[in-house]
Length: 339
Ligand SMILES: Cc1cc2nc3c(=O)[nH]c(=O)nc-3n(C[C@H](O)[C@H](O)[C@H](O)COP(=O)(O)OP(=O)(O)OC[C@H]3O[C@@H](n4cnc5c(N)ncnc54)[C@H](O)[C@@H]3O)c2cc1C
Ligand code: FES
Image (cartoon, rainbow, N blue to C red; front, side, top):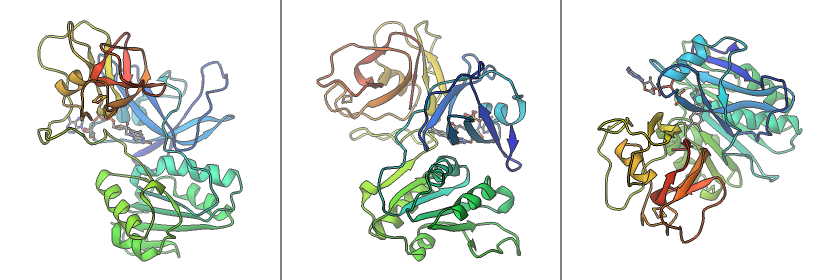
C-alpha cells in the first residue's frame, strides 16, 4: 500500500499463491468485493492505474467521505488481506494507430489514463502523447511525479497540468497552469484534430471536454471516455425522479439469487416470482437503459461481471458474450451487473 496524497492510496493486488493474474489491458478496471462493510458484502469497481504481468495489478483509490469501500481500502485494509477480485474488463483501452493520443483526466480520473501512459512508455511509442490533467493543487495531485517521468521518457510527450485552487508559488513549472481545466482551456491548447482522445473524470468535466474536443474537430468516434459511476438512463419519454440515489427495493427481503448493481453500489436478492433484472433495477432506482423491453433493440444490453442469467423470452439476436439483455433476463445464480 502506498499513500499518494492525503486522500489517495495505491494498492497492489496479487494472487494469494503468487500465480500469474489474467492479462489486463491499460484502461480496464477490476470489480472487487471487500470482506466487511455490509451484508451482502459491498462490490465496487476500480480502474487499474498500472497493470503488468510481473508486478500484478495496481489500483489507486480516493477515500470518499463516508465511502464504505474506499474507506476500507484506504484506511482499514492491511498488506496480505484477502479481497475477491474479478478479472479486468472494460473497453476503455488504447486503439491501435500512429496518430496523436490525448490522455485527459481530472482528479482520481487519472487512473485509467495513467495505465495507458505506462503502456505507451513501455512500448517506446513514437506517437505524440498529450497529457492534460486537472487537479485542485499539487497536494491533491495523485501520481504526478510518476506521470511526469513517463512523459519525459517519451519522444513526443507533452504535459499540461491545471490547478484550480493552488496557492501562489505552486504553479511554477513550464507545464503547469493556474485555473480549472475546462472547455476554454482545452481549446486554447490547440489539440490536433486527427487525435484519439481518452477522457476520464467527473460527469460534468467529461461533458465539457467532449464539447471542446468536438469543437477542435475531433470526430466523436475518436473520443473515448470512462465514467466512475452509473451510466445515464435511456428510456423513451420518461424521466427518472430527480435525486433518488440507488437503494434496496421496498418491501420484505426476497430470497432469490443475489443481484449486485456494481456501478450503483446496490446488492439485493432477486424477487420471488415474476420479473426481470430490468424491473429489479428500476425498483432500486438504479439508472436503466431500455426501449422495447422485449429483447429486440439491445438498448438494455449490460455487461455481466459474474454469474449466470437465463432469458424469460428469447432475444431476437443474442448479445455478445459476457453481456445480457436485462429486460428479458433473470438471474440463474448470484450475479454482478456493470450498472
Ligand atoms: C469503471 C469504474 C472505475 C473506477 N475507478 C476508480 C478508481 O480508479 N479510483 C477510485 O477512487 N474510484 C474509482 N471508481 C469509483 C469506485 O467504484 C467507488 O464508486 C468509490 O470508491 C466510492 O465507493 P465507496 O464504497 O467508498 O462509496 P459509497 O459508500 O458507495 O458512497 C458513495 C458516495 O456517497 C457518499 N456517502 C455515503 N454515505 C454517506 C453518508 N452517510 N453521508 C454523506 N455521504 C455519504 C460518499 O461520500 C460517496 O461519495 C470507479 C468506478 C467505476 C464504475
Ligand atoms: S430494452 Fe430492447 S432489448 Fe432490452
